[in-house]
Length: 194
Ligand SMILES: Nc1ncnc2c1ncn2[C@@H]1O[C@H](COP(=O)(O)OP(=O)(O)OP(=O)(O)O)[C@@H](O)[C@H]1O
Ligand SMILES: [Mg+2]
Image 1 (cartoon, rainbow, N blue to C red):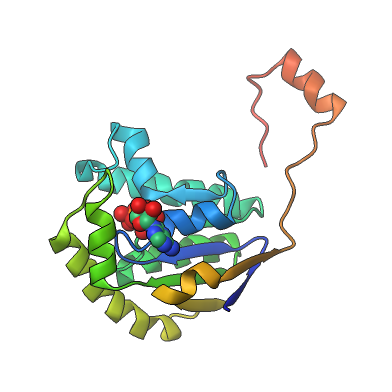
Image 2: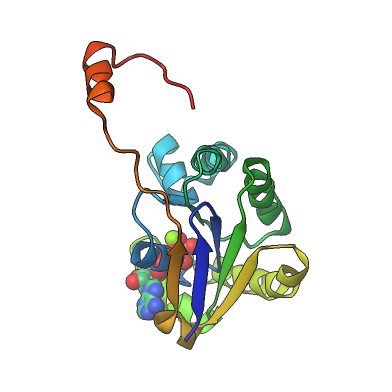
């Protein structure tokens, strides 16, 4: 069993080909608000998770949301393929600027499995894309030890369902005080900076 220990202020980087189970893994172990998905960012901007014409905007938004969470000390889970050196560098930069540790969870799932899962779901990316992703995964697995993470984990296909994620020192949401409630009623438009 793989025990994945995550500091409560960390950036968790999920890494893996389309169909490897990143979003499923994220849903299983983290709350909805902790997970930031690059595909959802595309949809928030252009109403489609598949509209790659807005990828630059979507990744800017993706990094921004992660940055905001990390700057206030909250756990953030990056749900994107993170397969390229450049994508991982951007994520490391975001974390470093916020002073957050980075934990990588790489889902090492075969082309065969990813392709089968991809074909069976609603949003199909296709075998060509999955094959390219799997090739990038091999490169990424070689590069990870040299990229300087707090921790990185490689979960093989048969290890994913048995892995356990343990978040240590997760910040609870700020409790709502009567003063906050009153201020909210009085001037909900007020900008409060943190
Ligand atoms: N551990 C698992 N065992 C069996 N099926 C799984 C597992 N994880 C995910 N799946 C199935 O595989 C499909 C793809 O999973 P998911 O959407 O989580 O992949 P993904 O890595 O987020 O893909 P993408 O990069 O395209 O967003 C889904 O239909 C999901 O139910
Ligand atoms: Mg996904």
